[in-house]
Amino acid sequence: MEIFDELNLDKSLLQTLKGLKIVKPTLIQAQAIPHILAGEDVIGESATGSGKTLACGCGIIDKVVSKKGLQALVLAPTRELAEQVKDSLIKFSSYKHFNIVPIYGGVSLEPQIHNLRYADVVVATPGRLLDHLERRTVNLSHVKLLILDEADRMLDMGFIVDVEKIIKLCPKDRQTLFFSATISTEIKKLANHYMKSPVSVSAVKLVDPSKLEQVFYDVNKKAKLSLLLHLLKNENSGLVMVFCNTRRITDLVVKNLEINKVNVIAIHGGLSQNKRMKTIKQFNRSTVCVLVCTDIAARGLHIDNVSHVYNYDIPKDAKDYIHRIGRTARAGEKGKVINLLCEFDYENLSRIQTEYRAITIKKLELPEIKKVMMIRDDYNRARGNNSFARKNSFSRKRRPDWV
Image 1 (cartoon, helix red, strand yellow):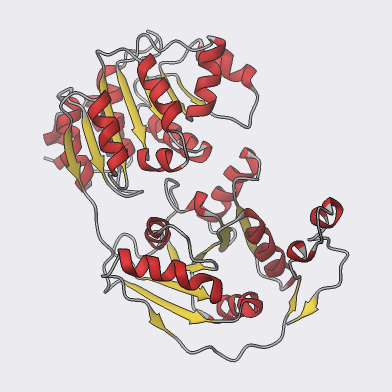
Image 2 (cartoon, rainbow, N blue to C red; image 1 turned 180 degrees about the horizontal axis):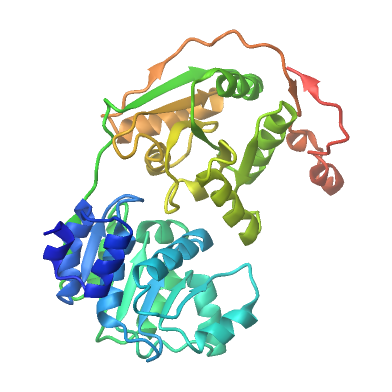
């Protein structure tokens, strides 16, 4: 007998899992599913990629009846995660033929309005769902199951007011599930207000120091790009993620890697939804092996087989550093984190080492770096409010410098 058989899952779901060759539950699934199927409210603490969507899916499959209106609502912080959750739920509930509708901004309202009329399950970002609620194009009065996925990130992104408005519009007689990578004080307060005697389950795994190597180079800011290019060309790596703190720096890094013939793609909040989804698919398929990104890609998204994580900028929030490095050394594989420090990063690194004392980051000597062609960031050199200079600071017509 397979272990999933012991969790009293829906027979159709068991069939689906066997077809997908998923036979053993993850730690969060084994802990959460019995409580979910028992109808209890659950707070689950677990990292991205740990199997939370399947745990939630068990509750949806158990409670939702096809063509009986909107009965399950999943809130997610980003468009990418909403799409990802929707795809997973469709896959897990294939025998049930649920109408699962994703709702998020950046795309037309009209198709969503049409699809909502027939929805059994909605996966939504808070802002766009509120737009529909104000237009009265969605009805939450029959919701049996409310799920907050990546709850801590929704709060970090400032969605707390929106989330509370949505929760209050759902029936009080419902089951509520909160899943989060970390359970903060704010999440506990939210749970105390809106959940009924919630059961807490945790499957948090700390970084295994034997699998993850963390190093840093102390480098002049002007030499960061040259060092990054040198390392990308000389490190024996597979899929690589390069994290930056802002969209602007992300674009700068991408343009400089491109002119130096690195096959690279970018993802950040300034790109269209279609572009972001295409980028994730390209990277997951290893079509492109270097992804330069902001923290939008640090968590929530399903990205496997990352061998190296580069922090081109050190994040201000220590938790963001933990989420970034959690992208590598997964599923028992080894990984490497390389931090590029200049004088502007010292304070942020100090904050990380203070909050996470178990983390050891080894300093490496700078290698010899050849001069390479680089486009400089002219934005900081634009005077006053010269909007033309700002808009054209990455113009391809400018001659690159050699640094």
